[in-house]
Length: 351
Ligand SMILES: NC(=O)c1ccc[n+]([C@@H]2O[C@H](COP(=O)([O-])OP(=O)(O)OC[C@H]3O[C@@H](n4cnc5c(N)ncnc54)[C@H](OP(=O)(O)O)[C@@H]3O)[C@@H](O)[C@H]2O)c1
Image 1 (cartoon, helix red, strand yellow):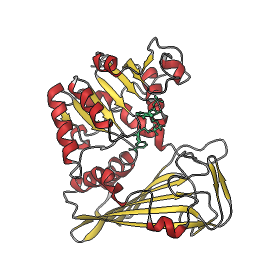
Image 2 (cartoon, protein in one colour):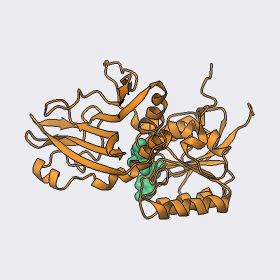
Image 3 (cartoon, protein in one colour):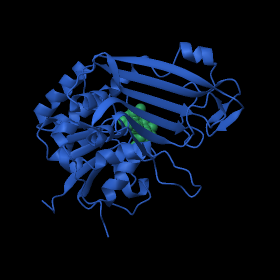
Image 4 (spheres, helix red, strand yellow):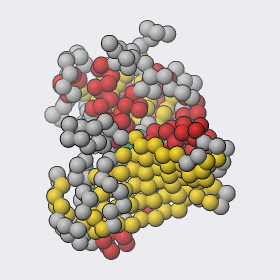
């Protein structure tokens, strides 16, 4: 088993896909089999050139048929999540006999996506293949990490998972689309992140509940905004004083009449905000209330300026890459964290 290698295709090379492609080129248990891109400027380029690594001999293509026809064990599928094509392409790859790992929704199928779940199961049966949803959140920070930490508890009252992102230091292209700079009352009335979004995170909540032998009764949703106290520039524009400079989404999963799992998302533009909910350092934080109370922070290592970068996007790729051998070796069908058990990443220690 020590010498077993896995042929992998990287589908899309955005922020997540590039982190994955770099991993696949460098990891000795992985043989890169193909790269699918949509950007015409990337078509025909060597995979190594796309991510600043030595040439690989594998050329990026926009030919879906050629990718489907390739012999490969696994596809890390990381395009924009577009309702029209995402599921079709995932199912085609699964039916062609390739295992698929993907951060592009519907994530691990859950009760809110019965049709998608049925199609994925059918494609796995057709191809004798496996599907696994990966990501940092939804994903690792909101399920594997807190569930692992429950091993250190004697009694659990409530588990809070908090994402903090400072969008000045970690600029994101959709900052304006997400409502930063909007009139606070207008945004409160029309949140850009749909109140239904929790359904994409439900697999993570349900994983924690199931791991604790419980079932979620309902999920309630709260949304509040913070005003910018001064004009604040970010990479993609400017937010004026008095407009929306911070957003807090709160989703609560109730079990036996009380909150058991609460996800908070604090997205802030700098720290000149009213209210300032969190110091702006990017992090995922797990707090478990109970006996003994527990708090765990997941952050990128400090940069040269002493601050912690937000690594959520590369982590989303890496948490998929590190599970490739386990998903390839799993029984066909949807592979959950319970199916995987403790994942044992291969090829990471390279002296
Ligand atoms: N679960 C989580 O924690 C989590 C976190 C972050 C992201 N995600 C998901 O991961 C996926 C990738 O995110 P990302 O941050 O890497 O996005 P991104 O940087 O915007 O990259 C997406 C890539 O998709 C391809 N693409 C562009 N237009 C497309 C189109 N019209 N149809 C199909 N593909 C298109 C492009 O690939 P090429 O450049 O190769 O042409 C683009 O670089 C998304 O589905 C996102 O929702 C999940």
